Amino acid sequence: MTRLDIYYLYMTEPNKVSSTLLQKIKPVNLLLIGLMIGSISIIALRMLLISNDAPHYHANFALYINGEQDKFDNFTFYEEVAGCNADSHNDPKHRVHMHNNVNDAVHVHAEGVTWGHFFANLGYGLSNNLVKTDEGVFVDGQNGKKLTFILNGQETGSIANKLINSEDVLLVDYGEEDDARKHYDKIPKTAGELNLKPDPASCSGSEGLSLGERFKRALDFTR
Figure (cartoon, one colour):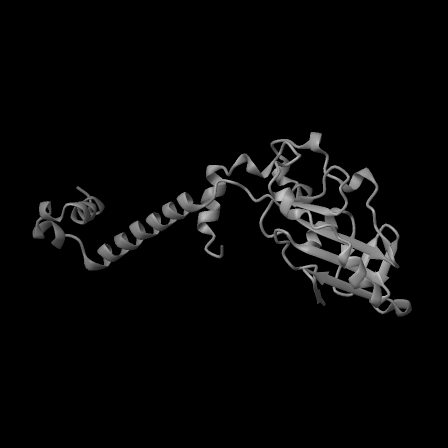
């Protein structure tokens, strides 16, 4: 009988363990064994408690340049539903994208996704003082124009590194400062409704987590 066997027997049926057997185990070993069993138990419990579903939620947004809304009317801005496959979770564009030519709804399929990630997947650039689109680079203060970010009704000076949360509403506006609020109010608030609908892609976030993914999440104590 090993020391681990003796300790387990002592923890489960202490009356069956003699003092002679316990004396064979040094206190420091008892402490280490206890820590090991405790750690394994905590990780196992976290694996059980982790939701089986991968993230899948929505947000709304709009981008205006000099008073004109970017319509994102090129098919390249949208995730191809037919293109989804088993390896899609490894594609950065699968983590956050748009579908079906709906140019105001963001689909999020992963944790830790920021607005900067989303705009990068569109082929755009975004920082605290500029936005880069297919039409060029627009810098805050250039030609008297202002770059404004309004998130959930509140103006903010930084957006690129902010996480996209469910039902967020974001406006990115470059132009006359007085126009930003009017543009924000025009953004459809459809994210809550979309959250209740099945994902249009075959690589839906509802496929569930693999055992390996659950184990990795259980080891991440920052969650």
